[in-house]
Image 1 (cartoon, rainbow, N blue to C red):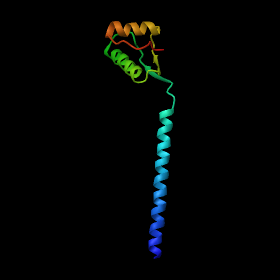
Image 2: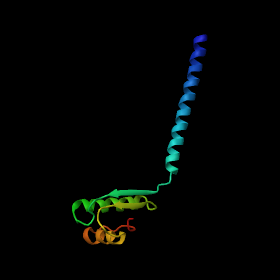
Image 3: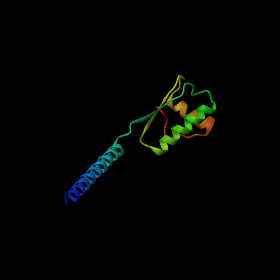
Image 4: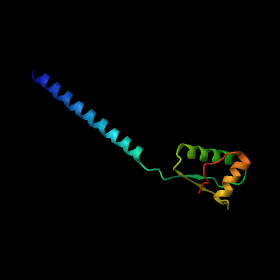
Length: 103
């Protein structure tokens, strides 16, 4: 009799622990979904060279802009170029049309 009571109590306790764990996991997932995304940064030292790495950069920026339209994209580069000239170069050289110029 006492063993069956212990089994029932242990089962109830385990059920409570599992339910609490599921609740905590759901809260973490929900908080991550509601988190405001501010910006994405890309580092490319030479954005005006015209090489294959530059095409990868502009394709990545475009993909991020399409997936997250409200997200600002920043390019960290050693070149002295304006956001508009970088966007124009991406279109002229690689045919990659960005949704908006990077910062």
